[in-house]
Amino acid sequence: MLLNLKTIYKPGTEAEVLALLTQKGHFPLYGGAALQRHPRPDVEAVVDLSRLGLDRAAEHGDALHLGSMMTLERVRQACRERGEAHPLLGGLARALTEDLPETLRNTFTLGDLLVERDPQSVTLTLLMALDARIAVAGADAPRSVAEWLASGDAVWRALVTHVSAPRGPARAAVAFQKVARTPADAPIVGAVAVAWADGKARHTGLALCGAAPWPLAQPEAARLFDQTGDAGAALDALALDPPDDHWGSREYRAEMARVVTRRALAEASQAVR
Image (cartoon, rainbow, N blue to C red; front, top):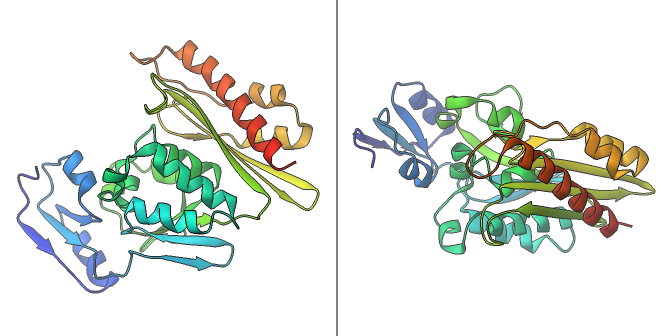
């Protein structure tokens, strides 16, 4: 419960929203699920964003812009509809089903997912592997997922307008591998590999969750895999900082990161041969 909530605003323009968010205790309301799951005593007013038109998907160049007020189920449907022509978006649709069941996907918005920053989120890990960009009103440039995750408490009061997800070519694939208590559980350690072909050239994106406090991109490992095709060289280049908790020791997580990375790279690369 938001015990200190006193006021709800419903402005009609982005400028009005930004002016309200400069005030102490004012927070954007993408849908409310994140604020309900993580109650904050400093929330005194929320700014309803429903009049800004942030609840739709639009194609821009080589990317699909996903509005921050879209429910995760609407995001999934928008990506699934384009998944046959653009398999990277089809992979994003599948990642959303890994994160939340349909009932919660109809409640959570994309903005809620971003401010909650679940370190086990398959969707955030995939967006990182895709080098997706997060558009923040008033910022000089869109942010990478890594920059967003590192923004600390500031993410709760930023106004995200959309996420730009690369559509990618028709010859592309997404692979996700994880270790978890059960197949339905969130990953203890997970690896997302994306692969696409541009003519004879092949490209790989790679990110891990559970191998560091936040999802972590692995550009050096991906670069080596593209250059050599040697999964062993890529595994040696992994950047890992695994936590040590009741789900698994640092040593266990580091070893599992290598296992799931090898599997994900093999699955994605074989799919685009």
